[in-house]
Image 1 (tube, rainbow, N blue to C red):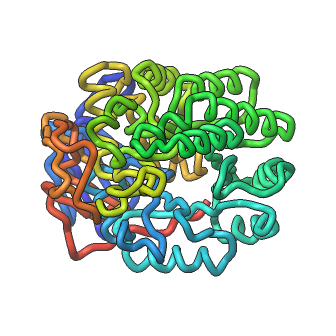
Image 2: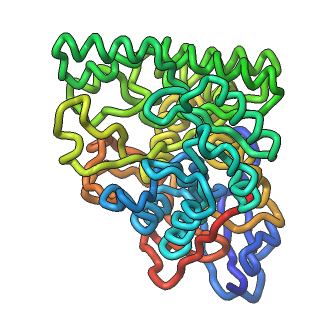
Length: 445
């Protein structure tokens, strides 16, 4: 790799403050951060004038690869899209294939090692009665996180299994990541709407109201409290859900939580325009929920932003609402959207908080900080040089994920990455992909 110099870049020092710095990277590791003169010897030089150096974004919830769904996404296309969006690491979440033993883990890991251009890891799941005894082996193979559903079709059959999974994962120093939606009210509403003959796109969203999410978070938080175990609530979508997380934290429960760009931007009103293209789980809520989620992200109730990237071809959206695919593309647009709306336009997030929720906190949650998620001496050099003045109108056909559509079509977003460095290698230079390097690696924790 040799020596990489990033000259005269703006370096965040807290809140919204920046200072000028020279960053020195030797063999993939940050070895110096200073205001000193440019070192006389180097193998590669990047001029950082006007650019802000950020730790590479870390997405701990992205559905990138399933061997039966490579027409949706794969490690090559997903990692390229992620890199253009300023991400240098993602965690591949199960889609349909259960990652529940060393063989299924190997399928995902081998595909990532072959094709991913950025760092990656794998989340196990979905956890149930049949695979709970595999947790120790998966943890020994470097798997940190295990996905658990509280609702159909992926939930365990027995109620007692929720506690068993949370206990066993925590006992092995892992993390249970929980999709929190309660079956009872949701099943009633889905059956009711279908009997009434409702096939409109809004029926899906109305069948999963905020109470569904809040009830499930309350349930798993209570189990975690009793067991004194760590849990992580994925894709919080409502004010009621955020309030349950806030309450749990106040009671000393070991809980972290994430939300997603689509819950910070879209509401049920947008379904009138986009129809099934905005079908996702959990469903969209109201404008008051959007405001509450931004406040929860700002005040520390919600710890991280993730993409929950789960694209599909248009043909799988343009069907009956109950049969339509649930999920949207979001890897490439995630960081620019959070920067534009959360920092540049509203000021709800400081630059420091933006870094925390997109890089530092995800690294802490997954146990890879400060090796990742940090611009500090000794950290691995995952560095994004972001241009705060670079504003682009989003066009689905110009993004890099496998499908050619995006619900953010026409939205102007700023703060795109100009250069992306992964493990000390320049993967993107002046927004051009370097086809000669494949610097991504499999992360264990």
